[in-house]
Each structure stands twice: as structure tokens, then as C-alpha cells.
Image 1: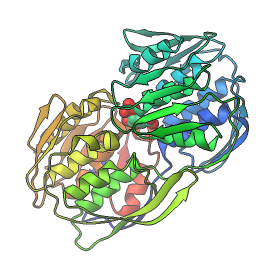
Image 2: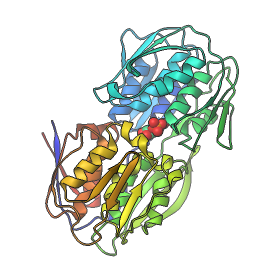
Image 3: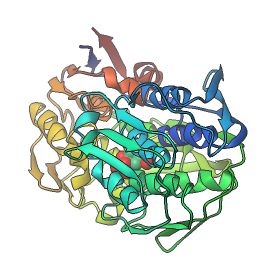
Length: 439
Ligand code: S3P
């Protein structure tokens, strides 16, 4: 099992570019596959999660060419052109791939089965299956978990669905099934979640109306292939936003270039601003339907806050690294309303608390969050061994902690960093971090 050895360094500075957005890359393959015509995607994230989706779409009869670095060409087969796979589709570590594919496959004329790695096989799937059954889909799970078995050939009807949890994956699964329904589908969100599916559907010529927390999709007769540009992943940039903020090198500037700044993703900018961070979003531009910018980060003395609950869904994947920032803040940081963190690639509340405690940080686990006592001065983390429990974002978060560590940090079980950030050690090195991989 591979691990990282992360050496303490004097600081970070310069410019880094993070790989393409994972959420958008998955969606580009799925929608490109069922469009009419050829969709070209640039900035595509060639990570294990997105490659699982690529393999699945190929197994369903779609030709997808990797035409250059981070560039793919998807030869769409049309809404009704997918073919049955002759094996179970393995979605690897990716909850997004499994839930969105459940929606897409619900509308097909053939049967499908979805499986995944040991982490994914333990994650809840009924949240997606339940509304899809209301639409008429036939779906079986095993005690609510994968394998997900979809019996094809059921006609789907549009529904009006009140999401019980703020989840972009469930919203997207319902919208993708809605492409195959005989009447419009509406999803009502309890809180705003990432809207990449809606934006991309519009790019493919589909009618989607979103207002006041409601998203309505009119079933199209076809999706029209298009050209897509995937921006840098805000969630990958988050590690460097925190690194630049807790940076011991005074007056240093760390710039993260070409980052997607869709407002449904940038809750961390607001949270760090409330904590006193110095983040400047500059050079605004767009990548098709998605806004992009560069983010400049300067060191700042952070202060603890109670994270406003409406920001939780807008920063859902950034909590592990936010906890590292909180450990370096003056005073206490409290996170509540974040029980969803318990059903991510790991239980991110428990796993982060275990690692923080192992490095001498005082924290208390809450049912729906955490309370962290910050240590604002000098070396905040003792160094030592932490276990990422195979969770990519935990491994990268503790790498960032090395900026304020008294001794090297050994991070166990890091192979899954490749699910979202294939060359994390290399990109981290370009900022000044020292992360080496050991087998
Ligand atoms: C994602 C939605 C979020 C997020 C995940 C990606 C997506 O999950 O945590 O990493 O691409 O739709 P939930 O919808 O379960 O909150």
C-alpha cells in the first residue's frame, strides 16, 4: 500500500495549475455519449474516477478517443443509441459516476449492473434509486448499497421531486433520467448545490429552467454535440488556497491559475474570507458555460468561526482541508450541518479528527460536524503518522499540514489521490511542498 512522506518546508509561492474539474469531466463523457454528433472536450481530467466513466461509456458502445493530453473526442450515439454492456460496469471509487450512471441507465431499453471498489460498495445508493423508481425505473440495491441493478425497458414519467438531502449527484441522476421521460421533470433543492449538469445540458441544446431552487427539464428529442472546455477543479485548487493562507513564508504570493469559480462551488472562498484569509480572485474569464479565474493567496492570521450552514453544500468537498486551516486559526472553529461528510469516500469527520488528534490538535467530533481548537502560532502539527483511509482528499489535506508541522508526516493509503489529482506530488512540488510517494 503506497504512502506519502511529507517533509516540512519553509513555505509555498509561485504559480500552480491544477487539473481539470472532476464533476464536469464525468458529465462531459455521459452527455457527449448520448448526444448526436462528435463532442470535443479539452482540459479533461484523466484521473481514475473519470477513466472509470470513460470505460463504462465505451462498454456501452460509445467510441471515445483520447486525442491529446487532457483532450477527448466523444462520438455520440444519440439518446437511444447505447448498447448493453456484457459485464457489470465498475465505477471504481466514484460515487458521482455511480449515481449519475444510475440515472442515465434507468432510461435505457437494456439491463445494467453497477459495481465499485470497497469504499464505493459501502456508500448509500437509495438516495438516487428512490426518485428514479418514482419515475418508473426498476432498480435494485443490496441493503441500499451497490451493486445497483437496473432493469431496462421501463417507460419513465417526469416527476416533481423534493430532494431530501442537498445533493448534486441525486439532482443530476434525476435530470439524466428525465432526458428519457415522457413529461417534464422538476427537482427542488433544499439548498443550492453544484449546477454543472444544468449548465452542460444547456450547452447540448436541452431546455433547462432553473430559478428559486427549482430545476425543470423538458425532455429533448436529441442532444446536440458541442465543444467543451473543462476548467481547473476548484476542489483541487482548495489545497493550495489553504496552503497559501497558512504559509509560514511572509509576503509570499501563491497563484492558482485557470480555476473554475462557478458560484455553486466556491463556498470555501467565503468561509476563508470570514476567517480572515487574503484571497483575491482575478482575471475573470469563461470556459464555455463555466466561469474561470486565477486565485491569488497571501498568508494571513486566520481566526476561528462557526461556519454558516448555508455554505456547507457549496464547499462540501473542501472540509478536510478547511479543518487543516481551522487547526492553524486563532480560537475555535465549529462546523455543523455537515453530516453528509460521513458518507463521502470515507467518514471525513471521523477520519480527519483521528488524523488531527494524532498530530496534537484538539478537536471534538459532533454528530454533524466538528469543533477544532486552533493553535495560531508556529508549528501546529507535531508530525507523525496519519491514515487517509484511502480517501484522496484526506491524503492531500494532511500534505498541506506539512507547512506548519514540526516533523515529517507519513500519510498512509494514498493511492486514491489518483482518483482526482493524478500528479499531486508534482504540482505540490511546483508550489514548494515536498511530498514523496513510497510503496
Ligand atoms: C458531486 C457532488 C457532491 C460532491 C462530489 C461530486 C457531483 O456529492 O461531494 O464529490 O459531481 O455532482 P453529493 O451530491 O453527494 O453531495
